[in-house]
Length: 340
Image (cartoon, rainbow, N blue to C red; front, side, top):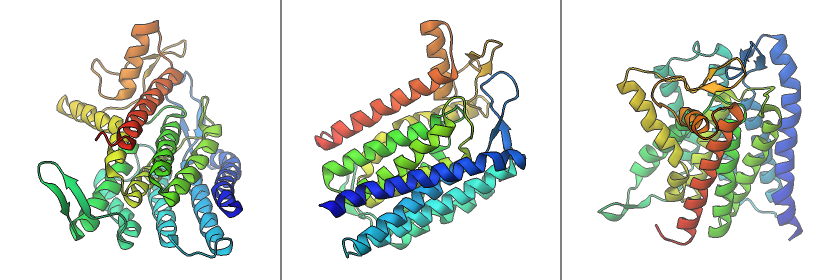
């Protein structure tokens, strides 16, 4: 019992502490070498350290390796170690790709085609261990064992798709990390209900790193997450869902990102390659950047202005986080009660 408590607590402490120490050192270094970006939703030209998300990924990886060590030395068990190693490697690979994109500069980084090609190998650690169960319930068809199609096609599509999608609802202090905390917290809860202990612990470790990251990223931000966080934790979330074999719950939790994708395509139809930022007014409040809504962030600005006549960056984050918690709560209730 004591070993189980230690296994649940110590890796999260290591993950959080590693993230804290790394970010505390990174922020002045980023300023010294000019790795900063403008805080777009604020008046003025505030420079904020870029690419801080990579350290949340490093912290989570340390936490996963601590969990693996505890299993070996305290529980004398090597069960599921391969999954922990695969998760850690995948998280590092995805965050490294995002970090490269970040340091090359906003709108100057990797081209979309190169980014997609480089993302293709991200799922390899999960594919290599043949994570997940290939038998799936398909609409109008019923249960089918998809065999290698699941491992070699659907798993990479899921990892790459989730990684890209998590990058779409972004651009506001605390938004990406708080959405990640919500996703991983509910993943941990669902894992508890279905008895997936390793996914439960890995979810808590990831959430611990993101909570500490929020200490530096919450309004007003001292560091930006960058693609190093969104690529890493988007792929991490997908991998947890695949390992836990609860794709239905994972897709339901991701409902907001499907809505965001639809709004993105709406923009393309109208020849608008949208940006999420608002138009900053002299008092620091925000106006919608376009006449139409092409992102949930734009919707949050419009809703605030209609309700209270004024929109703020904190308000955008609060609305979207509230929507994510609502979506996750519905997914948790429906899946645990076997309604869907």
